[in-house]
Length: 108
Image (cartoon, rainbow, N blue to C red; front, side, top):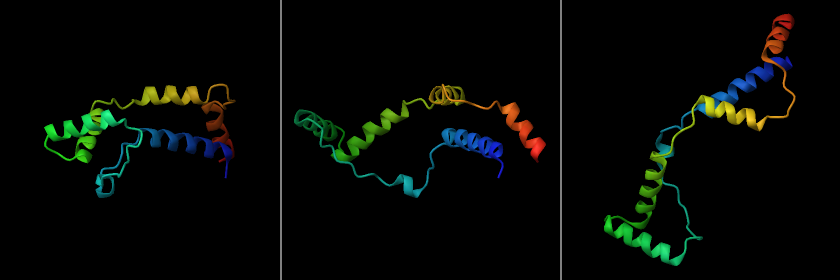
């Protein structure tokens, strides 16, 4: 298989993967079991008190806190993801897209 085709395919697939929204299916709805071993005793007590104030179990309170934090989290757009990709690949040798496309046309 042509190397330039693979490079173009990989770049497209990588950007598609980075921009893909998380799936919302039954499997993703399952609650993950997480231990909080690094939590200080006083913080654990405060967390239990907060859960009691909201009338829910500790695990539900932790989930609510995480969901609240994630709902305020801004998902990066294409420009931010592209800038991140450029930063990650800075200093590496790159073949310009025009050359890769030309190679595909000549060899194809």
